Length: 385
Image (cartoon, rainbow, N blue to C red; front, side):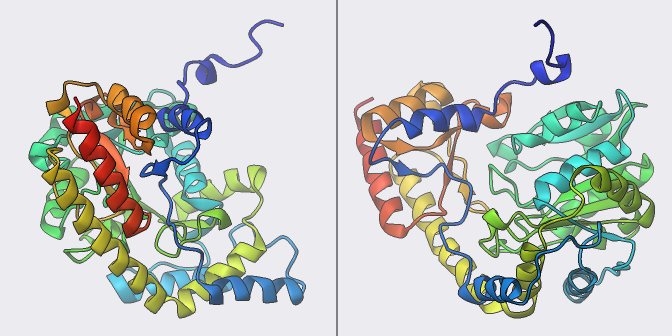
């Protein structure tokens, strides 16, 4: 058979992360700084709530939009934390993780060749989701000299008559960069001036360490222009539950829900019951995990700088993005050589875009002991170069 796969899919390269992890899976005793998920197990009271929901017979479909009880809790939390009011009936959609919410958002708003501005380095799915939706990703490169932050003038210079949206993700995967209220407010002025839509992936918002987390929709005039994406995977250690949500104006959420109706139907009711418990009783657990990540953050940044891999202190998430330029190796070459010689896994910066060349992503969502051992091995590796 010929041409059974669409050109759109054929032209998407494999995930740079997945390609590297296939190599890791072929090896034993690897210390991994590569995995982008918490090393904590979901807090027991959340797991217990899910088990109890099964015992009570919660095994059915839910409304396409998700359980109203969960949507009400989400809107109440957003209102309490960020002073933004959403109607739980028609301005919130429960999704299968933020990944589905991102896909739905793109498909709901993009017409062929509409452009979406994406700061890079960025999460590996962003560009692909734009392309799958028929749009065109337009990249703005960032670097360590500006803290991997995007500037309003860069956005303004990139805007064309086809620009429909900008995707913002702070704290960032892979750099850990955050932006404060003043910086985001300047971007919101550009958004208003050119009537753009902002897709705000705020999945790491609760893992912000130095400043108050900022919800982009809370900025003046931005609620109606923002599709807020968030979920439970990172801060609540619930990656495997695949539970997220989108919040936005009723027209956009309605359009996303129509696609969701024909594709996913609804998120798992057990995961939704678990998410209700997470929102009701997990503030202390989230705080404890954030404090632990914060200690690990300081340990790994100090260690990387001591072995000569220049690394700025990230403001959020659980990643650092040190420079490996002084080694003379490419990002992929460094990561592969480090893995083969010292059995330490990191992710090449190029997995997150071309401007990631010269960097690697290290996740500190692993124990302090493993971070210390990984740093020791990385030091030996760099000394031998």
